[in-house]
Image (cartoon, rainbow, N blue to C red; front, side, top):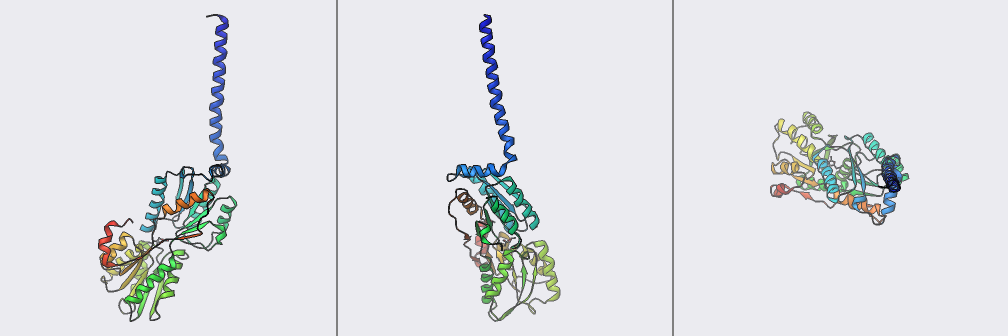
Amino acid sequence: MSKKLLYTLLTILLLTSVILVACSSSNETETPDQPADTTSSTTNTSESCAPNCTYQDLTLCYPQLGAESDWRTANTASIKETAEQLGIKQLIFSDAQQKQENQISAVRACIAQGVDVIALPPVVEDGWDAVLTEAKNAGIPVIIVDRSVSADSSLYASHIGSNMVLEGERAAEEFNKLLADGGAILELSGTTGSGAAVGRADGLRNKLNSNITILDSQTGNFTRAEALPVMQAFLQKYQPGVDFQGVFIHNDDMGIGAIEALKAAGVNPGDLVIVSVDGTRGGFQAMVDGWFQADVECNPLLGPQVFEMALKLMNGETIEREVLTNETVYYPENAAELLPSRQY
Ligand code: AHR
């Protein structure tokens, strides 16, 4: 090989390696750059893909409020399974353990990360104005999921969930039928200050016949564990069948806790008129066993609606400001038949 040829080959080799190094180092710098400016990068992503963004472009934040009930477990599963099925870019999920401060921190972390959409199931109604304003200022749309917030509706894009007042009204109608001659009921209510508890309590009072009185109302925080001692305390104070003839229970998990207390006190299925809310498998079993006389549906399977709306928001499409779930009331007559096909 001549000296000239060797020199030419060495030059080509050197130039090739310079080009390769330049290419690889430009990939490396892009990746670390992203976390440093995630807000603008995500904003750029939606801006660059809108109006043709797909689920593969979507990063959705779901700061779940907790894992207090079977309803909540089903809601979490619906969000996670739908995210998986649709193949979204990223689901940022957290569990606030029924503490609003944890939810607020999770929302703030998602804002800092520059997610495309936040879907927030708020543990309580009040106290969201500041963090919703922060999301709005960052250009991140928020969908309120499940329970409502008291914040001004200009601070969020939409609400998807149940009509909690209607659920309470439906429960009242069951008591009106089952206690037609009047009587007294107890109320085991959900988390104090939550849209679900406030709505159901209001609905009950809206429609309950005047010959039925609410003897007492205490919170069981939507959990079995907390409902049991509340029912025990009720039973120490009031005699079933004498002082009260019925119990309105804001969710099935608390109903199951209450049944434990009733059984221990020697109360039998059918001694009291019990109306619960949710329509979980546990609630259906309580109807089959004769404890619940009606179970007002509250549907937790909101994943498909949440993601459909999130994508519309990302693409700048018009969305409905409120999407209420279509629900019904379940009865013991066909509970055994429906139980095997219940999804939650
Ligand atoms: O907000 C929905 C309510 O929250 C459900 O009725 C209850 O089971 C859950 O904990």
